[in-house]
Image 1 (cartoon, rainbow, N blue to C red):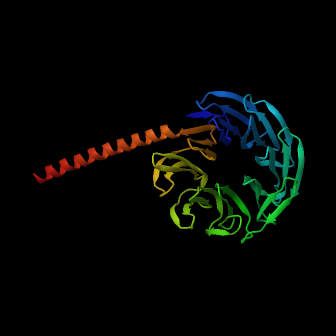
Image 2: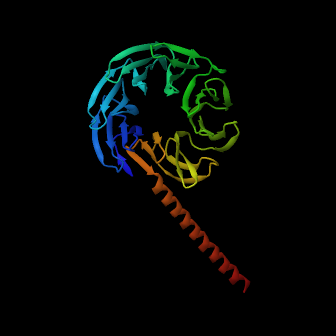
Image 3: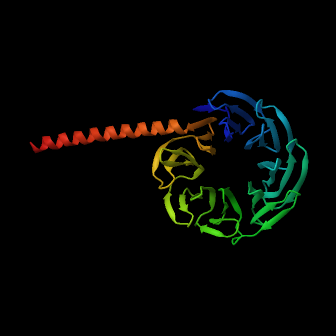
Length: 349
């Protein structure tokens, strides 16, 4: 299905019931049920960068604010301004952790960042100020983890009482992105290194821009447009070059194929590519407006684009249409072969 936010889409996500929530660059946030019916719409202070769900609440970062909404009605339960832009948010042990950063246009750099802790009721517990920007925050095995930029670099473990323990890695290059599987956390660095929380796993020639991983495969997009899949032993399974990657995600399994979704943008035109995660073979592709956000689960993939459109693909329907296209292509190929055989017969007479 396709829905509209009526402004550029900045964040999308599904809850456990496959209800869709999308936020825009001008603060619009809307919720649709799994059938695509609009449930509610609300306007928040500014661009919505991240959306998470917890119990009956939706917690988002919106401009300078952390905002808590009622999931059923969209009503704002509470909101707090932070010092700088509100970037990423998670909930761990029923407590809200959010990062913020202050960007200086003259210096073209981040001057100060912070990590905040709130209760689910909106009470501020503490704030940690730092010079490094946390490029992501995540919870893994009951630990709250941030990936840090310069000057400290490495990764930080946030303790519940408001302290941060810094862990250095083999490279001092800033961490730019991170992802996790059930068993481990992986981070991508500006110098092309892929690390786990203890040691280096891989090294590429260009900066790591996005990183996705399953239990057996890592997918990395590099500055310049390279999309590369490796196994856990760092053997390259496949590489696809092209226009710069905007977004990427490991999607649902269609028939026997686990899908991988990515969007590219040349500055003029965009391209959506769906590939076989294991071998990189192209399953489907189409033109698409510039995109900056993607989210997937076991049954759906959603992509939000600059033209305000929200595209949702459902597993079963995608599989049926893909099989139908394969059948049509097989029929066309069969007719083409029959025509070639007739032409050969005529030439031999």
